[in-house]
Picture (tube, rainbow, N blue to C red):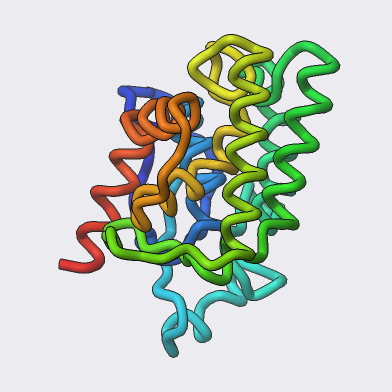
Length: 221
């Protein structure tokens, strides 16, 4: 277990406990983790090793669905990465986890939901392996369609809102949900256009992204 002052020297800790799986492979866990960390929201990290007897023995304590990620806030259990993000957006409304503009917020929710429920070709063929490198990987056709769609979404948002992030100069829930995709593109050496490549560099250079990577590296060493 680790206490996260979220990359800063925050004095006040909270009751938030985020239960996650292995950092090298758990894309679903990565989303709320980088969201909390990037926005400086203090939390306690509880890391469980997936597919082990230990996981099966302890997960009931934290998650009604028996899955990760799950956020424990006192007696409240919030499971599923999108539900966690929405809960945090309400609880910390002053931090602006969604874009402030109504139209931008609607689009951010749409592309986040699309990531949450879609892109099965990408998920099936380019599974998350944060520290893996597969430079000679041949992308299957169904995954190519997903990659093209993602690249189109990124370019539309970056061009429309003119920022380093998808909806301007501020990181949002949408960026958190596409952070695992960034890691996949790096792992599998996916070739992207200039705008999408720049976005991959922006996300992968964030201290929060690098901090997750340090934790993932410890798991495989």
